[in-house]
Structure formats: structure tokens, C-alpha cells
Length: 126
Image (cartoon, rainbow, N blue to C red; front, top):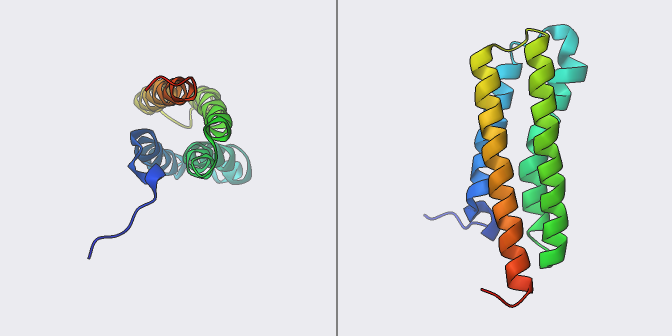
């Protein structure tokens, strides 16, 4: 039996954002217990916000979707800052830092590409 999917679930940037959420949950499991309600929670919420905004925005107009993609892109930047803080506090190692930054760079590029694609469609170019 094939599972029906929403259109946004086919977007590569959505699928990649889910992989990033999994990564963030994995690395934050080892954060100090004192950080559970601060940096751990913030990192998890920021990473989840990326895919949540892609999903939520996909149901509206192109301009609405673009606004949600901008919010998702801001969440990517938030994850970059949290990654750096986590590294400086020695909650993550250099490999995790580089992997997180790599995800963020790729997600940012993918979001920019999707936003550009939406803009071109609004202008009548396809």
C-alpha cells in the first residue's frame, strides 16, 4: 500500500531538513543536563523550525511560501550560531561542528534556490 504524500514532502530541501533535525537530536543527546531547557531545546527548536516552515508555507500562495522560506532560512542561521556556541562550550567536537555547518550551508543554498524559483514563476518565467 502506497502512502499518499503532501507536495512539500517531495521537496529535497524538506527531506534534507529532516535529516538535519535527526542529526541535531543525536548530537544534543550528549549535551549537559543543565542545558536541557536552554541550548539543547533552542537547537532542537531551531532545526525543527526549518522543516516546519517549509511544510506550513507550502500550503499558501507563492508569496506566502516565500515568506515562510525566509523564516526557515533565519532558522538555519540560528543553527549556525548555536553550533558555534556549542563548540566553544565543548558540547560538540570539531567533526560535529563541521557537519552541522555543512548541513546549514547546504540548506541555505537549497532554500535560496527554491526562493529564486518561486520568484521566477511569479514573474512569468518557468
